[in-house]
Length: 219
Image 1: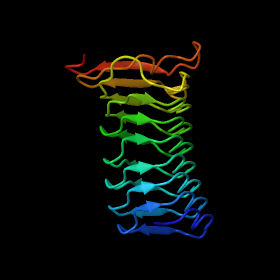
Image 2: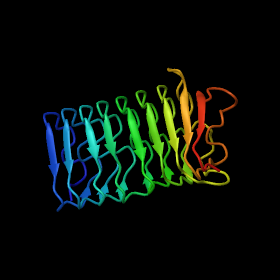
Image 3: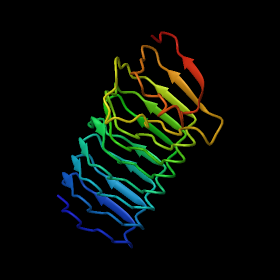
């Protein structure tokens, strides 16, 4: 394991390769490594603890190997240069504020194994344009996609019935798409929206959905 805060604040660190012999990356272990641009995680790593790569502001890509089952809250928060993320097929959820303030991230696919999205998970991802939600999400945390102002397309393949579970607000897609010509929402065959996901909060700051497409076979 890499212990808590082991390399916190190593601002001259540029490249990091973590081998398959390491199972756990500890809390805050690489926090504030602001010069880190390249991260390689080998298959065999299972747990990335909270804030492990928080404020790695130069990091450009994250590929979470399929051995990863748990990623803690704020693990990649404020990775301002992050443009590409690959989610592990071993994970079940996106933790609270996991990618919050990743202002350069333009595209994100949440694969079918993801069934929960935490509070503020992708909030303030201002450059996010394309979002695919492929899993049957049963929990949307408060403000999950809050202020993703440049969102242009959402592909929805989840088949979820009834009400979603949430901490209580309807800020999930608050202000989404307001800085462009609007969002195209595409519903995949057999997809179904849970009640309230796109509901405006107190009738204001609604997500700017301008085009709705139902693919053949959609319920």
